[in-house]
Length: 370
Image (cartoon, rainbow, N blue to C red; front, side):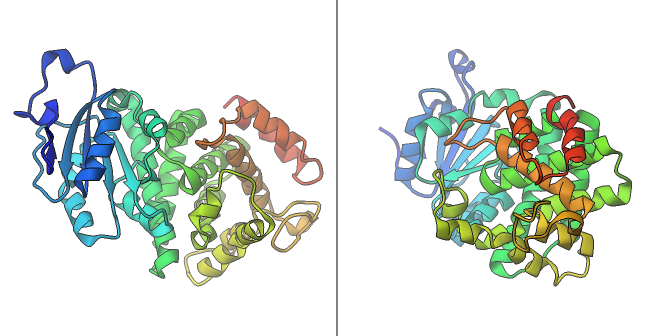
């Protein structure tokens, strides 16, 4: 019989694990109610050794888990405080999956601020949860720690951006630029493919997209030989380009089916919303503001919000637009297969008249070979 406050799994009976169980990774589950705790543990027990604890009791697990799953209401200040008390253990686990009860920008941002590497809806999907935890032990060794740190720094910066928009708080421009610089250093040292794989392993939705766009834009800039100043503008614009989406409900942003006309119109407000928010900050250059507002413009005038065409669209915007489209095509969503990079590049090649042909040609090595 399981205790209502602490699930009696092998890992927290005397703090040890029997030898025959060591082949299975240890996953800790934390929840704010017994029902939530029991529900998550019952899903994970078939694949992992599970140590379950209520957030409102003192931490008892003495071993470092391969992964931690937290299911709790993050609008509750007591839950937030309890999670912060476990910050030391959280930092040691390579996968920290938060199952959030209220799927909003503020809640998702709070989860990342608390150290999440992946945020999923609180309505637990068994297959999706198990897939997100697949081989958590393999993520705790080797060089993976370095790119993961860069991803987490960047994700935290993006969470901070969205929180600033949602709650009307000051924007940490320098922190965002610093995160972009870390991504640039990471890709310079280890290449684009590693970055894409790491991001897709840990993040979903808008956060994943911003991280992918930044990585792709940086690698595109490197391949073009972009100078240091322009590179900083490029990765900063990429980090900020979708900040206006903080004003759009996640139910629309992450909708698995085709958007209706009203939803599409709402989505198309995000470039202007981002521009209007950022223009109030002194540290955002005109070039970055231009890129945020116009990254959905096309050379033939068919884009939005201003229907710009031809020479009205500057080089930074043209590079960012190609990177944005490519990243959107190859990003991982749970409701659709991940498009292969070659197929995504073919789509870019088919956008005749909308994208600058020499840039699309130059992008081929980024898409396929770099």
